[in-house]
Image 1 (spheres, rainbow, N blue to C red):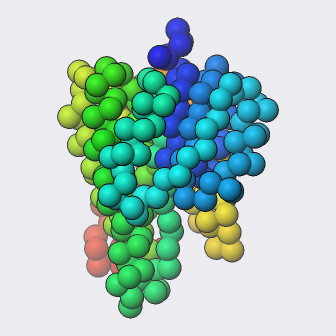
Image 2: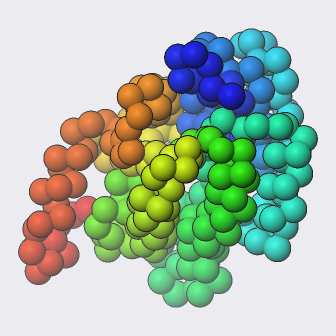
Image 3: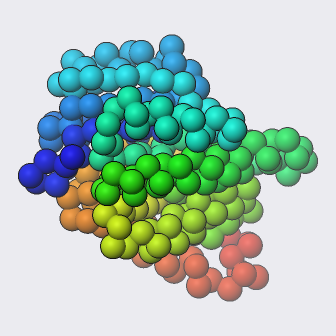
Length: 253
């Protein structure tokens, strides 16, 4: 259960290799979060951050295998996660891929991989997650969306479309859960300096995993439904959303 100040004491991270997730959990540990499950494909790579989280004060950090693309395993994965941990206060959906836009335009396998990783896999696992949270009567889902999902740009429209799908799904999901004790918070960062974006030219208003983590923890504390990182992106994307398409397609973005 959440503590007296409303912060989670147990967290399931879907995408346990995410730098944003690690930064977020470290900050939650500072707010008395004690039980962590890191779930991802590369369990060996998650051992180091798991140790770091234990050293930071977590009582237990379990590392388990989870593959967003293996949709047939999602029901049993969620059942086992909740059965082994008891109540889970927060589920952080942090997995996803940027992918290769140029390749995805020519290769259907790459396009399917991006969409399946960022959207289809998320929907697949969120259905049993929501069922489990509703059964326990409380919980929060934090979904890492992206500013790229606000309006797909020609430079990364496959990734943008996949995040737009996730964002729309989570908005509707959050509305459907009002009054159940379960809520959804959508996080829309811009360009984040991580291993995933290493080597790419940073976009204006770029940010860091720590800054995104700070925004997530602040958003949880105030019961936010949508969090932009940095906050200025809300106004930038609002303006871009209304740019006529004939003009938008000519922008160097």
